[in-house]
Image (cartoon, rainbow, N blue to C red; front, side):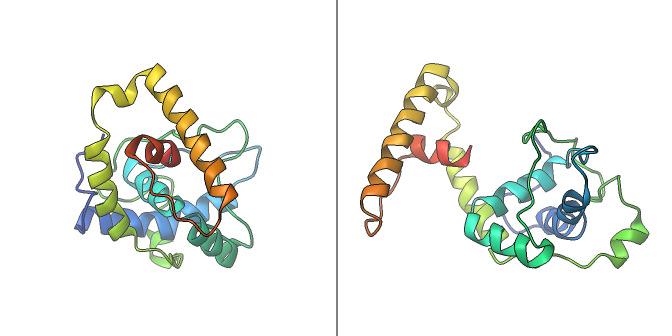
Length: 169
């Protein structure tokens, strides 16, 4: 968990968005398979998760900036995070590098997404949301919903919180 304010517009969230777009995503795009990047600070990982929750925007933004979709590589832990940073800067990059980095254009509203996710996280905080049997059942319901969606692309299906949890993970 992070002691930072990351669920609504705040200096902490703005700094995390800046570090994500100026430093982390370009850093991730530039690493080779032989040398994966260090895990991001938790606040940057949060922004990355928010960006990926809009997969169309994430793909469009990555392709525009890097010519390909950027993500974790095989063998890399997609949930690894470093401790929250004191000043919001990634330790791997110097202040001089940050000053010259051009921020990636993010086409989804990260602040609005953070606000929506705050409500969602409140709803899924209950103990049964972390029980293994319950999660397996939720995964099955998620797969059934995907099947239904595949049968009728025009129909919008609103997922329940357990199915939405599977989408997020």
